[in-house]
Image (cartoon, rainbow, N blue to C red; front, side, top):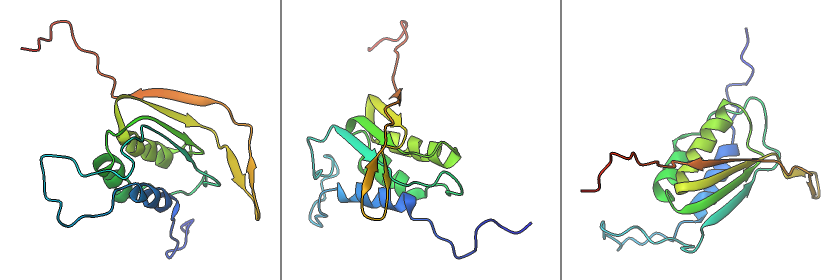
Length: 150
């Protein structure tokens, strides 16, 4: 059976998200060597972020690479209280990318996943009526009664 995708096919869908998240980092400072404090952030007051994924493919989308995990979980990890994402595919690749992006949330952070809000045409964006959200709390920790802080 022939493959569905040619050998030279490349997908830049996840790279676009990675590039956007990398742009949220502070400029690189080669003199910054303090390992005891976190690297400065470009927008330190940013606690809520919305990503509208426009015209994302629902089929044949490969899994996200390690770059998305690196920037979302390590460089921007545990920085947001709320992350809203619209247009994320509802397949295995989309679920993996959602898991990677949820690494940006603090403990008990809110991840909202919604249907696409926009569709791109040649000259404009057309808003869609999707108003349904699926909410989940990320890494909510419930302490056991027998746990002791001492």
